[in-house]
Image (cartoon, rainbow, N blue to C red):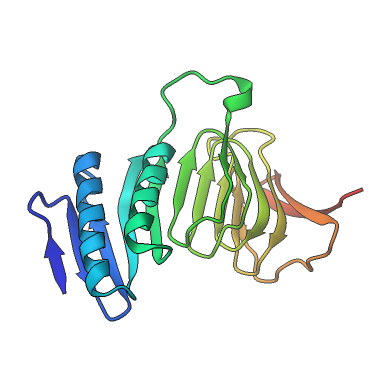
Length: 209
């Protein structure tokens, strides 16, 4: 089944396990937010077991706006929710060195796309299907299973650091990239650092003293 709201800001599609909400990237944010929350609440009253998947269709969003949307939707549908496929909009304000990193204290969603000019710090994991792309470096306090790209505009010294890497993870530093078919042996007290050298991606194991 499929349905649209009068303003065509959101298209809803459903099956036996989930409801997919496709948000028009050109729609006004507040209009789309109101429609999502109202429709989600109505659907949840009828079919509370269905998962709500919100696809922002590569829209550029502020993290505060996404967090507010998630909070309101969780009031309507609980934890049976995922929001993904959006780009993080950089702040227009000048930032100091202390504010120059994008910090995400959570696991990324499986369809989430993060694009930024800042250093990225994820206190969580990057699942298969998630994508991080940054001009600077990326630090993952968890496992990388998805795609992580650092130094995208030739930034020298960019690195990717993480606690663990799963087989199938895609890493890129500058122009050097690789898909890891064999995961490094995860060891307690170790972490991994990916760097670029002469066009080749190098993943090194470091010991935490």
